Image (cartoon, rainbow, N blue to C red; front, side, top):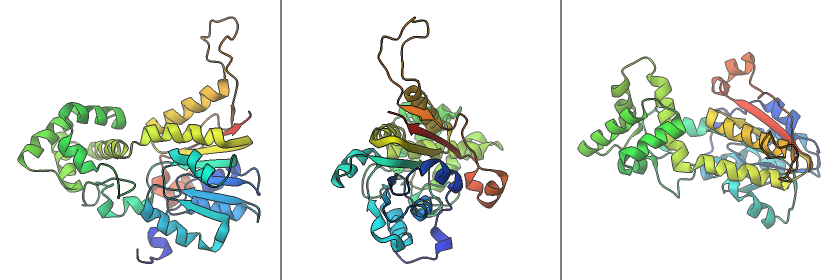
Length: 315
């Protein structure tokens, strides 16, 4: 990868000050940035840690990892890098002879670098191949999903992962078009979706369709569930988890899991006494999600949909 100017590829970290406020409780502790990206949040975390502090940076995207290594080079041995999914956190910690950590950050969604690189295929705004893989050396591509999945599966994906009301119509149009010619580019897919809708609301629908494909390709929701539990399990008492989500599916998973572990007991409400033996594991720090203020949204429009939730381990 060519060495590029900082401003051209470095992702502007969303809610940076709030992340630091909620995440850092021990400046000598070990922290995990499980979605390292181009290193924006990691840089802010490392600047807060003293000489005894440590950061583990995890990312599935090897291209982003190269960028973050360059950005964080000045921190030397205070940071280690791992080209894996955050669902592998237990194995990563074991490889470093670590049992517990002081905090873990999940900044879900895409970085500006990924969105603005046409050959990654994440955006409908630029023409590129239908790829959408976080790690381009493995797994199925969006082109495989679009051209090989039956209409029923496409409908399910668009409805379940995109919450799109025209899921069936769009899936049918895709299957019809691919019989004539293989659908290979983001522009071809965009044109098919737009031809079905023919309304001013097509931008939101395009976002939902591309989101749904990305989630399917990278198994994002199942990875989130595994990673979230692994992060919570690895925390020391008083350690914290911060999650920034960008759409309702992610936020719902995070909110519900935090609530379950903060409640402890899973018995029906009408039971007179607890018989499940469940214990509270977490204390929720953000009863309502923290969102960017107007100034941050003006400076970074992609922060608009961000929601930060934070919790602390109590047991």
